Amino acid sequence: MPVIYEQEPGAAARLFGDRIELARQFTAALAEQGETRGLIGPLELPRLWSRHVLNCAIVAPLVREGVVGDIGSGAGLPGLVLAIARPDVRFVMIEPMERRTAWLNEQVSALGLTNAEVMRSRAEDATPVRPFDQVTARAVSAFRTLVPLTAPLVRSGGELVLMKGVNAAAEVTAAEKAIRKYRLNDVEVLTLGEGILDETTRVIRATVE
View 1: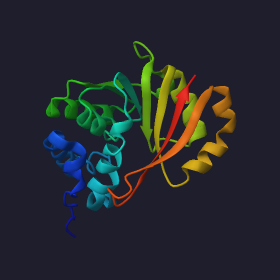
View 2: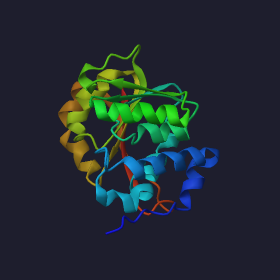
View 3: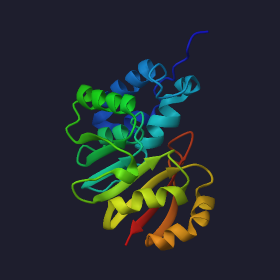
């Protein structure tokens, strides 16, 4: 049965602007190699742009200038996508699995991303040169589990920007103890992409005291 690849949605050029060719190059590479390299499942190919790439790109306006750590980068979602969309920000993609770090390094080189680097490490063992200004993550774990992994990596006054599913608000409620313990403030759930994307993106954003 032939694989059906998703055509580029009209919103892609709007979200990536003059970086769209790099986004196309990355998406094509992920479509060609993602399944065989264990980065994405076969069912994701027909929705690679809409469910994955644009789902990450819509978060780009929330990213601050500075250095952003991306936890569990995997296929480069959102780390590589955000590095493409925001060349003014430096990204450190933290991923423990060797085959995935190999892919990430290959893409950083192939795309010529001078604002991105890869750190092979588990989040709890990561040792950045200095605390990050923000930390991102997508589809890694429940919020209450993510907080102890991510908050210690962020400077005082920095932010967590964590991509979540439809149960984001419930995850915040379930993380009440972790929120207090790790001194998170202004915890909020944002819904991004309404009127732009077919599937909206939910983000939990919080400030680390």
